[in-house]
Amino acid sequence: MAILALLGIGALWIERHTAVELPRPTGPFAVGRAIEDWAGNGHEVLAWIWYPATPNGAVADYVPAAMRAHTGGGLLRFLTHDLAKVRCHSFRNAAPLPGPYPVAIFRGGASAPVVNYSTLAEDLASHGYVVVGFDAPGRTGLVVFPDGRVVYRTRENNPELCRDERCYDRLLALWTADIGFVLDRLAQRPYADVSRAGVFGHSFGGAQAAQFCADDARCKAGIDIDGLLLGTVVRTGIHKPFMFLLSDHSGESGPEHDRVLADIRSVYDRLPPDSRHTVVLPGANHFGFSDDGALLKSLVLRALFRIDGRRQLAATAENVRAFFDAHLKR
Image 1 (cartoon, rainbow, N blue to C red):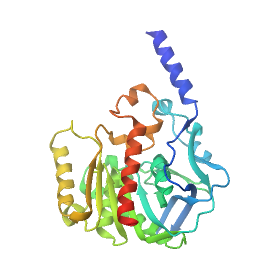
Image 2 (cartoon, rainbow, N blue to C red):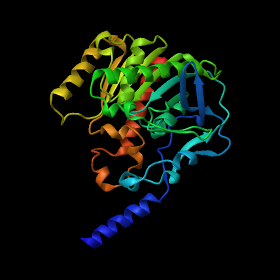
Image 3 (spheres, helix red, strand yellow):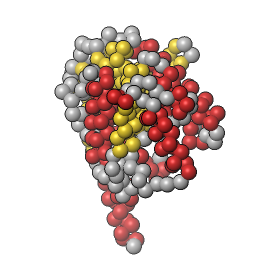
Image 4 (cartoon, one colour):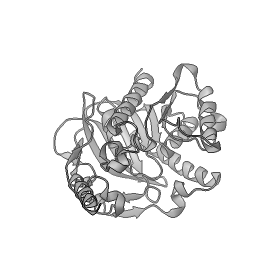
């Protein structure tokens, strides 16, 4: 048993230090990526911008070195790839191609940094979209600004610790206000067409997308990727194209599970009939919508995925693009 344990640890060590590449974008455009500090009107966010670009210059680091220096350790770090060895497909600060292109605002799950969803962002940008994800200081787990400031999430801003609706409503209002701020800033970019803006998000980010699309007319189409619904959207509904993209919950049951599905069904039933969609990915795992689907290397962790993580990411990217193509590009 000791020999087997040592062999297992050795295999994990070797795989952790082996280079790995994110899934390649499937669209015809090269992708540029810029990371910028946007502040004003009571907001500050670290914006990650993916866009159709001229393929010149260096490929960006998956996670910038300054951010990697502050990532935590522990067992999970040992069970995942060394972030310095992960290769993405975006050119750092490449010149944007003339647009304008439709816009897609993305929000991640819980307090996860948006870089964890680079696969979905790169793929959508490669098909002719300006994709913006953003991190908020004090609410995202870790934000490292270009000027060297490092801000960690505060306990009161952790949605996983919320115990009542007031807590969720407060955080939801902060995040959706930031989405509006990001759209305001994008309106100043000549390559971004904010009149064709979609919003999508995973888990708690999906709840943010649904609430923003219910509240703000600038959202022309939205996608909730495996997120429960929070806020007033359950009562008011959404009156524009919207899609629920869900993992496989067929083995789940209980009052909470039934309530979440009932809320989704209630909102879905009131959506415009010609532009509402629900897609369930058989075998998909809630955590496989992020880059973890491609980067988890431990056999123990991969065993939690009933389908291959890269296959789940590919199916997700295809559905997101097809929906936005239909409702933002017609």
